[in-house]
Image (cartoon, rainbow, N blue to C red):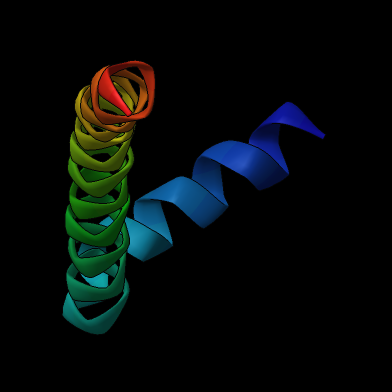
Length: 57
């Protein structure tokens, strides 16, 4: 089983298309994390602003 996994990993390293696909996957995951963090931060700020406006009314 371990021999199969190591040979598969070696084959992936030699295949440039697989390496490129892995790189694109990592970039997409990083972009998703940044978007989630930005939306979360923006959501907290927007919620605070709406609460302030609501309390002033």
